[in-house]
Image (spheres, rainbow, N blue to C red):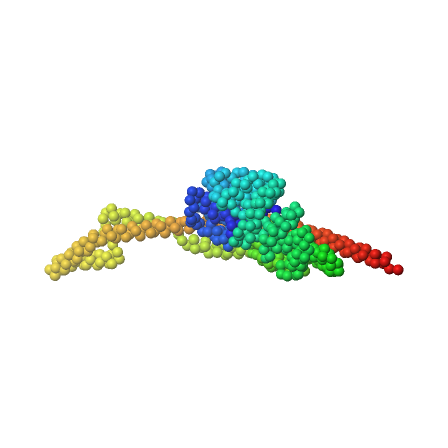
Length: 634
């Protein structure tokens, strides 16, 4: 009878994934929230996949990045996010270990309390009450106000799951008195009080919820639930007038409208007003939208209508309605058998997957469209079961894993082909690379470099300007030297003497120019030598890398081959295991659905028995009425 407090789609994802982004930010921002700047591209890719609902891709990519130390600048946030996604897959033990490690590392108190709160919440939703209570016990007083209220609600739910309704009521008392307490706190308090035996206070609290203004569909549904609970409690307490007052508050468009109409009719019948009882009961059996013929309230209303006609003395109509009810029950019984047969053939699960495809596995996936079934209305009660939903998600995820493993098995063949091509390319290119390396005589180049260095150092030490001259200056130096030699051979001719003077002046000018250019040319040559040194170092590094590659590449090929073979063996071993688990889980999911339909059949059999017994009573009454008439005849 208790309710789990509401969680919208985004809020649920944040809760189940440990409020992934908000809490990840809080690891480094316990005092004041600050925006998280993504500094590692691989971490940004993980966040992108996460917010695209690609949870399996996100967590596998994140774990790969962590293995290769690609998210070092987001180490804590990455661990929180990984723990949250593990939680979303129900792996609460592994997630708990991650959070415990973060706490041991000295996480801020607010982060620590949030971690334990979300861990407790997921454990409770998964049905691990002991572990959830252990996590709740570790929460101190560092939660924000909104989460503190939800913590109290969670603690009360854990107590109610233990059957300690008095303890749950005590926990909820203080929260319910708060002006900020929501309808869920008051509703759960009312339930806890009723279940603990304090009926007056419990009914008063539920009555408060049933009359409270509600602006959202969620709170309107909760208000309807409170009024239905009050109505049926009043019926059980033989207070039909109060029951009608409570049930009149339920909306006709509510999911609980059928049950409310049925209860309103029985309250009227208890007040000896069968005509008023016929109004809601005839509405239920009218076949109007929302009045599904297989609904439990509608089925019960069929015999209730016949009962009301009998109370009015319309025995013929009553008998007719009882016969119609029996025929309807028989048809429904056959329909249930057909639905059970279809479920056991796998049509339900296959149809759900076909109508609700998804490329990823994850706990945030929901059923949006129903499959084609012989009687789709029977699925309402089946799909409403939390246990069925969880079991179906497990089966769907196993199917995803089987497909994923088969995809990797096929991919490994491609990796083998890639490795073969790489080996062949290495074998083809190695001779040419070795030949090119042989043509490059690095040792000879080093000798020539050393000779140039020595020549340059000598020129600098001796201030040999001509030694560093460029080609144009060297030509000029040679021409001046040739002319001077010619002047010497010409002897003491006066004309030659005049020319020799001009040559002397040209030589002096050339010497002056060489002296002026010497520093710049020396610097340029040293710069060129530095470039030569860099190129030689690069050539040496490449030569060493080439030699290392020739030694390592074959070993790398072998290592890749061994790794591919090992992965292939692991995947081949996992495929049949996952297939067996998938088949076993499919059987469990189908049996859960069949069990619910079987319960509907049992309820239907009880209605049929009641109807047949009532028909027998009507026939007996008619027979007794005929006997006085027959006795009066001569």
